[in-house]
Structures are given as C-alpha cells and as structure tokens.
Length: 438
Image 1: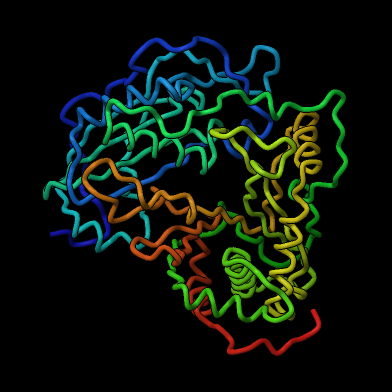
Image 2 (image 1 turned 120 degrees about the vertical axis):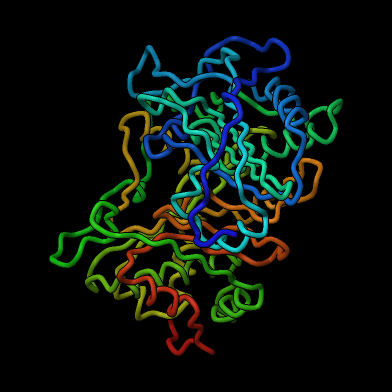
C-alpha cells in the first residue's frame, strides 16, 4: 500500500526503442515559424494519463509507427539553422520517437489517492533521455508504465517548438484513432508548412506588444514570484459549473463574459491579493489566444504548429484589487480583441528583428488545457481516469475535470508562504459586487 505521495521506482525490462515511420517519409528540413521557435517555448509539453486497463504495447507501437507517417516531423530532430544561429529547424530524417516500456509496483487506486497535485516523483513516469542540451532530446518521447493491477500510465513529451496544445491534441487523437482502427486513415490530415507565418519583407512592427515589454517600475518590496528565490508548492482547485456561473453573474448585466474570462480574472485577482505587492506596481496577465481563425486567410485545417500568441492584460495592483470583478474581465476581453491579423503579423515581424521573451516579472501566465479534448483520449480500453501535466509549473493551467465537462481544475504553483491564503481567497465568492462604474 502506498504510504505517501512518493511514487515507487520504475523498472525497465528493456532499453527504450526508437519507433520510426512505418514507411519512408519525405526527407527535408522543416522551417519553423517565429511563433514556433520562441525561446520561451524550448521545452516539451508533458502529459500524463491514467487508464484502468493496459493497452497492448505492440498495438500502441504499431499505431505510433503508422501515425508518424503523417506526422513525420515528430520522428525527426531539432537543430540550429545553418543560416541563422538564433533559429531552430527540424531535420525530418525519420530517426524515430523514443518509446519506453516500464513497470511500477503501484495500482490505479493508489495513484488516484495522490493524484490531486503532481509531485517530483512523478518524473519516474517519463524516461529521461541522456542529453547535453535541449536539442539532443527527440521531439517525441513516450513511456508506457504498466501497473501491478493491470492498469497503465501513459506519459508523452512533445516538443513545444513543433506543436501547441491544439496540435498535440490533434496528434494524440490521431494516434489513439489508429490504435483502435489500424487500417483507417487519420481523421485530420496534418498541415506541415509553417511558411504561412513567415515574416514580411521588410518587417513592419505596428503595435507596442506589451507582452514582451518590461513595464514594471522598480520598488523595494519582495520580488514577485522569482522561482530562484522562493519555495513553491502546487495548488489544485476544482471549480464546478455552478461556481463558474456565479463568477460570470458578477459581471451581469453590464458585461457578458465567457467561463475562461471570468475564471482568469478571478485567479489573477486572487494571486495578486495573496502576494500583496505595492499598490502602484504594474502587473500583467498573459494567456494563450488561438489565432487559427483570426488570421486572414485562416490557417489551413490540420495546422498543428504553434498557432497561438499571448494576449496581455495589464493594470496596477490597486486598480485590480479595488475595482470590481468586471474590471479584470474587461481587461481580458480587450486583450483578446486586440489579437487581430495585423497584430499577429506585427508580432511575427518583431520576433524576426529581435529574439524577445515575454515579460514574466509581476506577470501571471495562464494556459488553457480544459477544452482540448484530452480527457477523451481512448486507445481502446476506455477514457483516462486521470489526465494532467507531469509536473506543476509556475504558470497556471486550466485543466479538464474527468466526468464533468463544464468543470475546470485550476493548477499552479505559488510561494509556500501564501499558499493557504491563496486557497482561501480562491474560494471566496462575494454574493454581489459592491463597486459600480468600472
């Protein structure tokens, strides 16, 4: 019986294999857009899925080999461009994805008891590739861990430079589909070319792009969320549909909003209340905005590269805390509305001229995973009993709630010193907003 949240060691009966595309694929160099190879995306998106019953390893590997025919860049290798040492590209050489098979003395029920918050020991669920740098790690690494009870944990690491959340979901559903129907075709044909997001010649930067601009004035207070200076702990809180509806009603009648806008505003406000920085400090909320249908023309169907930019809401601590709920929601809405075709093109051109990184000082970053359909990933033995990230990061994730399509699980790491306060504030909902006129 598992006595703590610490996961036991993983046993590997054999060395991991390289799974190559089932048949020869085009050998070429894949250009990555400026949205793809941003420096803050140079990591892998790591998902963890828990299944009650194991799926045949051979069927998983066979389907993976088949799906890599369509998604062949994931079987390639990242490298630095010979023309620009600041840019990355993909050598589509068919070398293959890493597939590791493991066994753990653990049951599904034992994992579920400790699954509310990721912890460091979960890293045992993903094979660690020996590497000297980020470039040495294959774009796709998979580990299937069979459990003592006959269950299975599937862990995937997909390089963020090749795909965003929507793209990773598209690939994973294609893999699951071919596992269930080996002779079928992929449901959506992936679109590989990233040249649809090429910079203009000459570049035209027509917007200020506050997501990259450090506008924070110096102050004598504590550094806001500097991971090197603080002990962070994961916080996981589930918001039911009724709770989210209550947040939305706080903005009625003067403002209609989405579930994301209401919850994002609430989390941002709560985070700032808990940290209690100086009232005059300028603060930001960054969140991913899908641009696939915002561009003219729209990105092609099946585009699985990075098709998002960061929306940026900004204000001061005092304005966010003392104003009503509608203030934060309106800032989020205005940030979303500003992401037009011209704005995205301007950002691509900015990244061509300068390899800027997002301003993360006094900034909360939210990434929405709750509407990607990842909780429905079925390889033939049912949907997952748990789905989430392998680790809790400093940025905030909106995750799906298994069995509740409208619920949202908010997961983020906060300084240990404010964790209790943050949880209390997150669950504090006023009956009505007292402040009007914002």
